[in-house]
Image 1: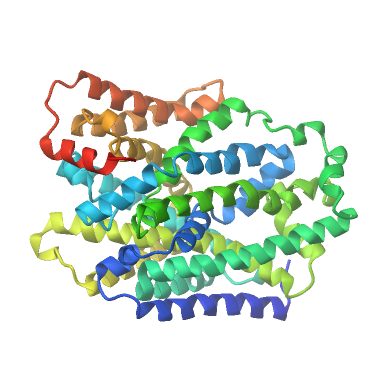
Image 2: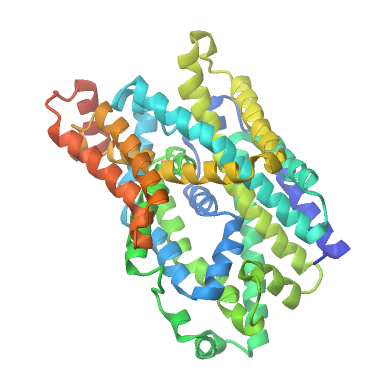
Amino acid sequence: MKLSNLDLVIIGLFFLLMLAIGIYSYFRNKNPEDYFVAGGKLPWWLSGISHHVSGYSGAVFVAYAALAYTHGISVYFWWAFTIGITILASAKIFPVFWVRLRKQLHIQSPLEFLKVRYNLWTQQIMAWSGVLLKLFDIGAKWASIAILLNVFTGISLPVGILISGGISLLYITFGGLWAVVMTDFAQFIVQLLAGIVMFWAVLDFLGGAESIFTLWDQLPASNSQPFHEPYGLGFALAFLFINFLSYNGGQWNLATRYISSNTEQEASKAARLSGILYLIWPLILFFPMWAAPILLPNLADPSQSYGELTMLLLPSGLVGLVIASLFANTMSMTSSDINTIAAVITRDILPNISAKLKSNALSTARIVTFLFTTMTILIALQYEYFGGILGLIISWFGALVGPIAIPLLFGLIPTFRSCGPIAAISSILSGLVAFIFTKNFEMGSYALQVSLPLIISFLVFISFGLLSKKKVPEKVDVLLTQISKNS
């Protein structure tokens, strides 16, 4: 599967555009607040689009494409639909809280308020565990982009890692959050064009617009069912809870989009835009994947369905556009992660290692971003040596997202004001223990296996809060009262 010269030119122009945006964004940063939270002046439409595209990577076109091929429309209902409705349902809650935290505590990192809400130890446990595991998570994503480049162009994996990682390293280091959100917008446009091109190509191949409805008659009946085991209703409900935590700030980079909004109203509008996009856009994006069993029957590896469809249906140039959109998705999530992790290191970790490292210099922010990104690239280059260990660490990061998100998000709700540092740390540890349990014992239910760490973590968090006899510190009481007022 090789690309034409025109396709390679399109991909090359895409990478050059990312660099140009990074250089342009360089001049928008005057201080660390500009660099990490866009000075709190991020327009709602840009924040909403960035929140949307930062929420998923190229895995959508590989792993989810395989599920669309084998299980049909159910992937929309347990993934995109649950994300969309959780974002819309909480649009006037958590986005508002994040903006108020920035204005009242001047935070630039999603974990910065934890020192006041709990204590320094709780903040540091959450910061270090998240940063160390993100190091490997992002490294794996560079490797995944390199695999795509290798499949389509023949470029070796190390060279592919250096190209994608190196370009991202430059534009993130130069431009900070402004570069990230502006490249997110450019990447969304590329994804939009590529998705529409593929959608119409499949419609034309199947005989026209009516195939949107007649398509399902040519597929197994189970492919048109909203809940197709093992991705049944229970699994969708589990993912609803997971996505509620992740997309309201449990994924730190998504919290940053709200923190960077100018006003509470703009943060809510950004959330609604992202939620609406999740409800509508995947229906167009996934249509070719749902149709793939008709166009590519008996495919040996369903994870290659989207790539095979691209080569089958599109002419030179348009293939390059679609491939660029695959890179765009992963680079969007990766660059978004790096900017937020750099903020956590700069604002939450370094000042507590040494008072000398406490700095408000923009140069410090850029140095931290450069060094962290470089480390992720070095880890990606050693992918052969990590093997199964890398996969294990990535799965541990997935296990940590929920347990860390529970004290992070529920700690903002006044109802849980009595849940202090012991509740937070116990919640994280119990979630990890539950995760280990699910990996070593048969659950009998996929939904329970996925959700058990979160359920245990949540129950431990609220239980310690209910059992706590300690008086809620005044600073915690004041903080929660201020951020929840009239919300």
